[in-house]
Image (cartoon, rainbow, N blue to C red):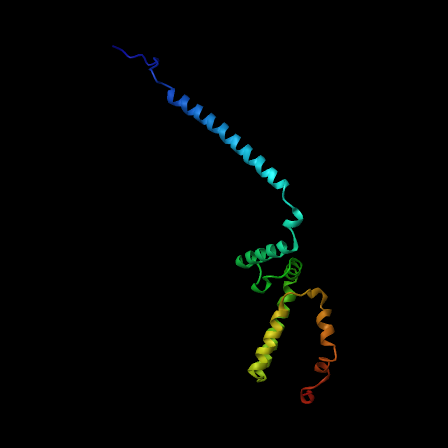
Length: 166
């Protein structure tokens, strides 16, 4: 007996048809599910109080998270953590100026050591200067210049090494 190559057998194509039907049904169920979830999310978004979401309290927390992420990715120095958004951005735009301030800090510390200042004095100067390395608007350096030119500090530039006030 010769087999006919064009003959159809019982069950041929059933698996393919079932796969297509199952795919179509699953696709429709998935689309319905996505539509329901999307509608739910859109309704919830309408209920969000934007003023409360971006309140000063929440803003500070978001800035903390943002600065921590930037530090972890080594995009900003550790000292920037916790700065307000305004100071963070302002300080980031002044990197070369900040580098100059940091070098000045290092030179001052080295000078204290080289001139055999007491350890207590060196640590005191360090602790007073470090917080000033970040967190200021350096494009308005008047805040430091006014302090420096006040009666308390004006003697520094007016005195020679031999005539330093006590």
